[in-house]
Length: 270
Image 1 (cartoon, rainbow, N blue to C red):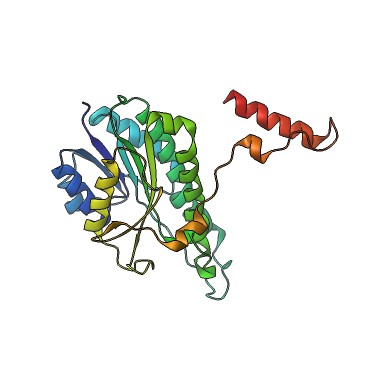
Image 2: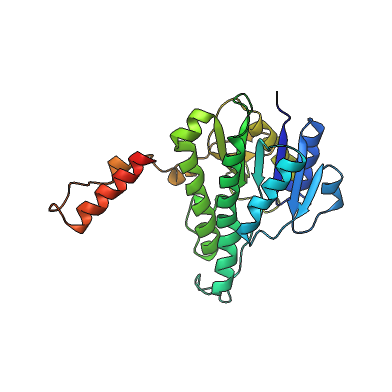
């Protein structure tokens, strides 16, 4: 059996420190990456690196280093976070474009790059290895909160990615698991002070599950996974491209018909 290895991206002093400590105690090789490496992270890591997650182009080199130094990671946790606050509390669009770009880069684009690199790494692992990608989310993908526009925009984008990966036949057949993890209060509200130890325990539980669990992995400390009624608003139906695109609508030779046929042709090739 291959050595279990976790790559923890965004390993800060709370969730990151608790997670690398727990995974290390369970025999995992641990690679930790953050803008600043804390002592409580480094002392439980086999490899530490610094990175700026506002630059998605750094992700591939991180994976290359981990594979070279520790081996192919079978668990990848993406934990970086950014929320740029606007200048006018009454106007959700008051955040400067630079802040929007930063939040998109950290919360979405680098997460996409990490998932992309994780799948490439998972492809190298033996079939019996448990392969898990975890994204640390929050409640902003389940409801509209105008003043949390950027959180909703960026977190929901990545949640759409997680749902898509879970529904992809290639992921299903290969046994790859993808999760959007969100700690809640027992009443289902967002957490102000998130529990590092509770996240660590839940991450480990997801990493060692035999099969894909609920992709919207909401949990309550001490209770583990907990389903909340409001989650259903965020779970989209899965459709094939053939279900979504009508290549026959419109007159033959129109732009719409040609575009629909092209989409279906590309889908069949892939």
